[in-house]
Length: 113
Length: 273
Picture 1 (cartoon, chains in turn brown, purple):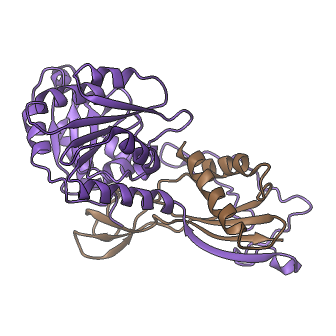
Picture 2: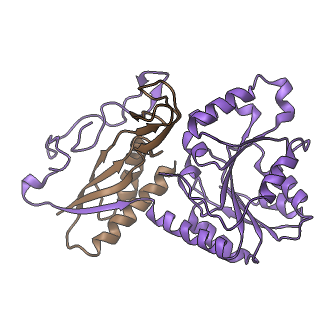
Picture 3: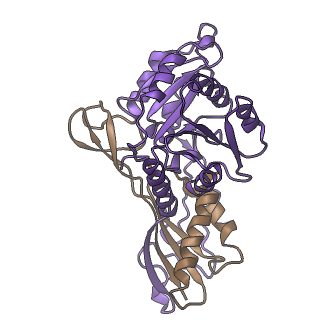
């Protein structure tokens, strides 16, 4: 459950940025969690719910965008979709396929009132 | 996926090949929760909300601290090895035997032990005569760069020393947390199955070397080393596998030689992106 530690990290990012902004509370948090980031969105959501309680983000809606995995095949030299690390190239059926996209893990924005 | 509340009608977890475990949240939007499916729109249409763009990397703080640790290790010619595996694959036994073999070399050896609780592992290391510091992570499931920075301060390492960091036994969480180590050593025992790299790809993606431990048990198991090589090759092409038995000493020479021939001043980033 590294999602708990990561949720605390997200809250820290939000609170740090709250000092610079004037608002009452955070109503929505938009996250980017790539399909190959190693972070489980459902666990993250569960942990954020707990971590946000009693803070400026209490009850905030959590929006998670999940960019898909993309890779580059050493076998045929083409870009390919990469549903999971270690998957074969969709063009030539071979590999290995190097991860190029899908490891994003960022707080994109917060909506405040 | 619903872009407004982010709930998924399908969960991420999967049973077998295709059956997905449903999300724990239903797709219920309630009265005060309008059903808008545009992620960039949010509730701004209501005229009260303001969007603050952050674009912040969530692991940035850990990565920054890991970078500082790495600089420190490089500046003091310290070779640091982050040892990772599932619980029970023999990390501490391997470490004890490795220390015994390397004690003949004059370099100072120090150990950071990571466990949820107890000083048991640190005590086993101390029996060899080497100084060990135990970190208990409590509810945490991994070591992070911040914990290591404090432990390093406490250990007062002399230049040129060799630092082993035994991470919490876990193949999932520690993979994401760079500690600033010079190299990552992932340990796997033959009782665990050849498909581990495919099941826990993040861990093996970052491995600079993979140790296959408990090979003295191979005659009693159906474990196939060639299958392990295949799955590892798919996750991290060109991976180095060293088969060892910390118990009988078989293969330990090659591992000790691997450690001896590492250069402390060549920092390798955790995961190539």
